[in-house]
Length: 363
Image 1: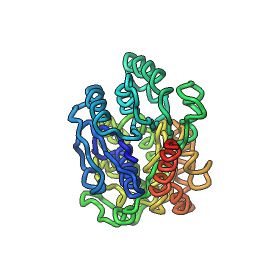
Image 2: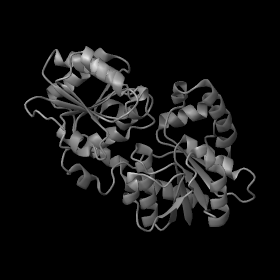
Image 3: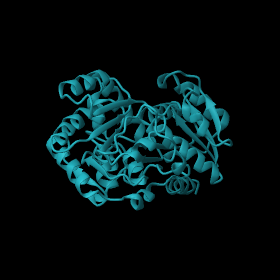
Image 4: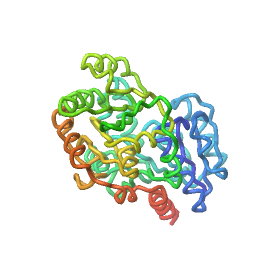
């Protein structure tokens, strides 16, 4: 059974790592896997299983990939197409329009629909219109959390019979090896005071501004250090905020790090301050490392991952004082070791669920 996994590229990112884990796992389970890329670039290419075929559409961007992907399907005839990310869902759906015998289409949804509030009105109108046309044509719509599934059903983007929820394949077989690598040389670590870490792109969704405000309140109660791993367009604003809050000696913006696991392992607390999450891969990674976690109770992933707060502290979104109080509480009591819960989000488990759905579709 041939499976084509459609993805933009193999640059470092949560969805990209999910795609690689699925491609490798399905190949090992007896599927023939083509990893079809809009542009075959990115650091994760070296982590792809040697038997997975990489197909380069050389399209440059998603909107230019529709015709090349349609040609690929006519020639290679995959049984199922698994599209990763919203843009690739639209590319796959458009490429299949008019095909007499299209492959089975499994769309994956990684983010709440409210993310469109962060886009332009023109993009939002086009994306919503295409989605309402194409999503009902998918054989399966796979969401990464129950909250995302409920939102899609409420908006009537698909039917209950076609939707499924499969949590992301986060804890891979090389997780321990990656976690035990050396910490970056530029990390300043004072072991005498608590270290708090956040990992995420510097974009509004991740809301590191809220984290900085909360961290300022924490430092008024006890000495601490904050490491923020990630890069993005909000760096200048965050640097200004750090200066304004007089946190320059306590906060490090570490930039992009290809393997952040050693940094998370070295910290005393992981904090996720997002306004919304479809799932929360890095939250699971922190749990898998035994690092206690605090997260905003944002739509939708953290509450499901932490089972309502059983495995970590949940605090209201957009509330700096509540976030600071949660951080202080966990630092004071040592937090919860959630490594047991993290095993519910292994690559083997998720791949098995995807494989079962594909075989069921084959009859």
